[in-house]
Length: 368
Image (cartoon, rainbow, N blue to C red; front, side, top):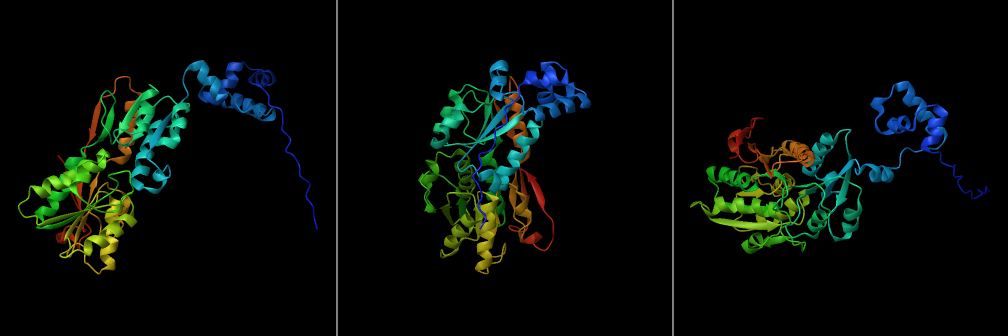
């Protein structure tokens, strides 16, 4: 039987910036440039400096020291709702983050921070030059912590706060376009499937008071936009509202099972996200309901999966990546516009309109 001796890893002493400069025969500034501004050096000199740094176990200039010296960290943060894994699971959040990363390029580092009380200490102490806050409740403790740092900041998708730049879309107008599309097709019985309206994790049928009192502005605006059109239509017979805590396909399936068990069941479903809408279509298949002949479905966001499911999902197409790029651009400007409202389009596909069911086509309508 082989026995392995426990060995402590040897710690090689670290060299300093001046040690590297002395070996290579260059100035200390040149060593610093090799790490932070390589375009100022020739390739040959930079490679010599980096080789010497490796031999001396010198990792490069200390970021904390650099921040103390210059007053800048060279990075910005995006504060996401809980949980932090959301941008890796949700295509809409990922597309937004892609736009942010694109705009940062090689100029800034990008830090992802999770909102919520458990993360306040990190938000308070992170070495950053500015913050992008992504969709928080209006009276959220995270927002108070961010604003207390007095760093440049911008809010994306809400809430709109006095004196703080905002980037987003007209959620209500986009939702109204979705509802009007289904009214024009002659539907009278509706289901609305929304994600989180409260912090209590509720899932199930809800009443209108819950919508009215919701602190989640984006979610509330979408549902209120649907209801505004449906309530003003003389042809609508019934509207059922169902809430799921997250924007997931599971939520759409679960909501649809409840809605389709109603008598009479809805003939049209307005889903507050594409992922919810995809789940509704999957539930309809299980019940052997034909989409859109038996039930029409409309989503929201314009993620790639909306066009991969069969039938293709009608949706609101919003410029998610462009929203991220504009958020960074606004953050870096000394005088950014206080309100940046991006355009959206209603993309009509097979899931709502029987007239295009057999054709691989779509129609786009600008939302105004």
